[in-house]
Length: 399
Image (cartoon, rainbow, N blue to C red; front, side, top):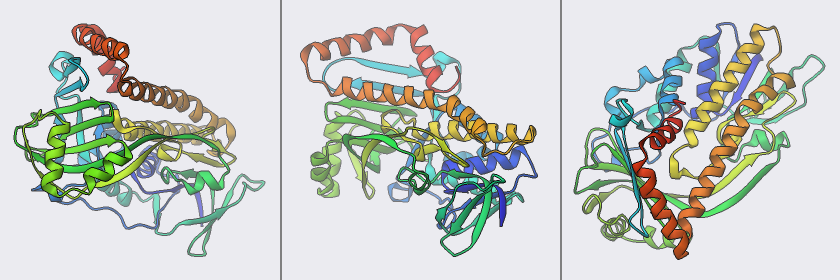
């Protein structure tokens, strides 16, 4: 088997790269390698029906998904557009509110279940004649041969060759590890609890986030019912242990208290999951004939919901550079091609990661002076409309 590009990992980023390449050129032979079954989207009517993992997709991500043909495959009724974002400090009176009307846009972004986005990308990749899905895993691969082809041994015993092997196989990427790419990483000291909840008061198409000393707590609006929200509760490991051991009734009470009852009582909760938060960044995004993207290249704190959006930026830029290489008659696995991708993405990823780390440290501090300056800064920032507009437009990918 011989392919121009072999993508390991059929998650959001891997499928997005495959979709973008198939839309950009009909004659690129693409392998999509993943042992799991393709994800299908389900219907939702209550807290127990939703995917626990959701993403706050920006306007830039929406435009990219539109370009590859996936956005139109997401049913309109499952898109939760939010028109307002309210952020406040638990240790004071500082708060910031962003409104779509101030920016003259219909929404600040869309909260979408990951399985809905993935199912839409599945539709695109399964209908593309240039993409072949291989339901297996990568066992090993070697350095490119003299012709620039990377030999890849699959877990089912088959061998393929490819001009470029793409690792989009998640934070613990086997491709990254087998390629010998080092990472700089550390624990945030937080665990994230995710669940779907029902609230007494309407979520009101608003993304809510309270910055607590133990970590941020977000309520994100869900489609079909304006009293349903997806929560991301970032907290200390010992607090996560405590609240996850609670009954549903006690968990709802603890969550209501942690959120200051901003939406009234939390009345119902789905099953809960937790995962440790760790920042990770590959020192280099490529080696000879191999490149990584998305969580395989970088992971970030979910406090601003930028992880998937950074991954889609990677997918867009990498696919652009691969298509540019084919247009020029170059192999996509050459260092010159992959270095351009790294130059275009690494600085942005690092800057976003540094900003998230700064926010985490700022709101974790309990020093009185820091707390005073933090709250005064939030109040001033909320009043300076041009600065607010610039920041939110930048976050939406519109600047």
